[in-house]
Every structure is written in C-alpha cells, then in structure tokens.
Image 1 (tube, rainbow, N blue to C red):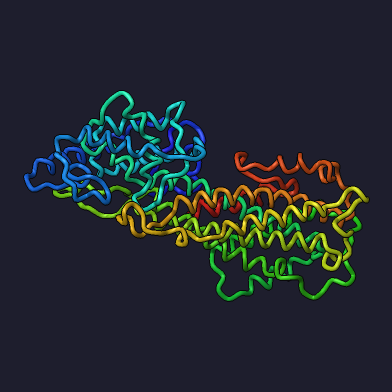
Image 2 (cartoon, rainbow, N blue to C red):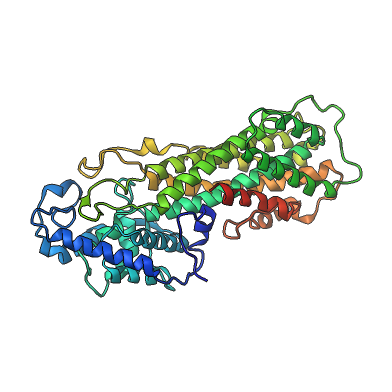
Length: 481
C-alpha cells in the first residue's frame, strides 16, 4: 500500500517513508496542479518584459548576467553539470529515497513549473530498486540542496535533455535532502530520549531509591502541569511497573540512604521534560520545512515571485535543539554511571560493580568518559558555522546540512553511550536486588551486548521494559508532531 504524504502527516510517519520501496501512484489532482503550473510558466515566458531567474539569468552571484531564454535546454544541463561535484561518504539510501519522495510532494503543490513528464519520472525514481549515490558534503542550506539534489536527480536527465525550462533548477532549489536527513536524525534523537527515561529509572532503582510513589506525587504537584507532562508521568509509571516483578526477594536496601539524591537522579524529570518539549518543537520545525514549498522563483497565477523559500533556517534550529538534547542527555547518563560505579555514591554496591578481580566495569566507565568528551566536541551550534559564501551572494547561511551531519555523528556516539548505560545499569540493578548476574552482563559478553542495540532495528535493548512502556512515547510523537 502506498504511503501518501499529506499536510497532517507526522514526523514518525515521514521517517517510515524511505525505509522501504514505496509504490507511488500519480495523484490525478496533483498531476493537474503540476500541469497548470507548467503552463503558467510558459505563459510567463511569452511576456515581452519577462525576466525569470535561472531562465533569463545565470545563477547566484552571476544573476546580472543575461541568458537567451531559448537556450534553456543547454542552460539547464550546464547547471546540473556544475553542481555534480559533491564529496564525502554517500548518504544512506533511505535518506535519498525519502528526499526524492518529499521533492515529488513539493512539486505536486503546483508552484515550480516542472514539466509533468519530469514529475512522473521523479515519482518512478523515488520508488526504484536502485538509487543514485549522493555524497554528504555540498549543502550550505541557504540555497537549499543544490549539490546533493543534483546527484540525486541526475538519472532523470541521463538519457534525455530537460523537458522544461525549470526542470533542473526546480529540482535542486529545494530543502528535501536536508529535511530527509533531519527526519532521520529526529527519529534517532527521540529514541535516545526515550531510552534516557528508562535508563534514569533503572539507575535510580539500582541506587536503592525504591519509593517512587511519593516522588511522583511531588512531581505532579507542580502547578503548571500540561498534557505533555501528564503523558510523560504515565511513561514513568509503566516503566516502574515493568521493573517491579523482577526484584529479588532480598534487595540490598541501603540503611544510610541520604534524604535526597544527586541532581542527575533527582532533577532528571525536569531535564527530561524540558528536552522533550524542545524535541517536539524541533519536530514541528522539521515538518514545516519538509512539507512546505522550497523553490525559487515561485510560479504564481499571473506572475513569478522571487524569494527565499529554500533557506533552511528552521532545519538549523531543529538541528541545534536536537544536538543540545543529545548532549544534555548524555551528560546526565554519564553522571548516573559515575554514581553507580563509585563507592562514595552507590550506597553499598561493590566498587566498579566488581564480581571478581577480573570482572568489573572500570574500563567501561572510562569508555563512557571518552565518548562524552567526543560528544562535547560536536556541540557547536549551526550559527557558528555561518560565514559569507558564493562570492558574497549567500552572505548569511544557516549551515543546516553541516549541523545535521554533525548531529548524525553525535547520535552514533550516543548509541554507544546508551549501551554502556544499559550494561552497567542492569548489572548494578541486579546486584541491588540480589539477583544472579547472567553471562550476558559479565565483562566478557560486553561486545555481544553492545551489538544488540541498533538504530536500524528501531528500538533499544532493555530486556525488562514492557511493550507498553516502549510504545507510549512513540504515541506522544504521533500526537504532538
């Protein structure tokens, strides 16, 4: 069954687009809009005073240079040729496929003047068995995805010349590739955020904090509870319930538990709530960019409008919010790990959770610190990457593609840190609750444990978590995004 992109689609559903081949069918109304837009472009070209960017002019800084309008076939081919210069590792096929699907949707809005047959060819390309390789480096974010989309759409013109005067520029003057990458990053950031909830409760329980009920009442007593917070509290309750049946008969309850725990445990609800709301805001920004028109100029009923719809400020903001969330969550998890392995703060557990001389987690704690150091090196916000580019034509750039690529690398580090948090957390939790340590949580099984968690699988490895607990935050994403 074909997935249809529509104005109300959630970021979670947008993420699913691209994970597998989709059977696209040309929506008759969409095709009608494309045809109307194309004929409006031709009518504009017939006007004696017409001066349309990219048809009567060169590109960017060279906009003052005039081009003979009838030369548009060679002019479009030259544009594609000079943009196919990207370098770097190729983007994942799912990102490229999703970008092609998003671009088809944008063209179907009926403002780009693309030839109808080119639109249909784009639909076929998006559902094809093989896709072109798209290098990751090339986008500044100011004029959209010029270089990556040139690589992505080149097969459309491999055998035939462009069919219309805007067929190339209308495909590359877009934010579709960055929006697709942002959707991918948001989904992984949300998974890491969801995992951080469960790791916090696991780590708190491992430290000996059994009486969650009173703490919940305290959190709920905050005066400004919103719907998001009430759903978040249900997530806590479900995760606690999933922990309870696994507790041993003789838990190691500390006798000297302090009145209040360190901030990484006690203030986790405030951290998680704040970051959750930021991530939902980031999702709204991504949806707006992914589904909105991103072209220049825009074909209106009786005129052409030259503007900056391709400028991806919203994606840069979303990338920064996600980057901040991942780093703050990582910092919280690292502090919690420190509490668990240190005898001064773990309330009676063995130092470094040692089982015997050769089996402890000191090395994993050092690994977590090394990962956190590397993650902090990725914290620069997108605005710090901006400088005047392209002969000063793009004098303010959002740097959204590089911010997203930075986030993409950051998320891979976060996945490793989450593996450490789950390994150490469950080991400490079992020691606290007088349960045997299975082979899977002994040090020689670390490599198998860390390979059990995967972005591609769509979830994390927490064997005690209930299906209800795992699904509830995903439900939130659908409601709020």
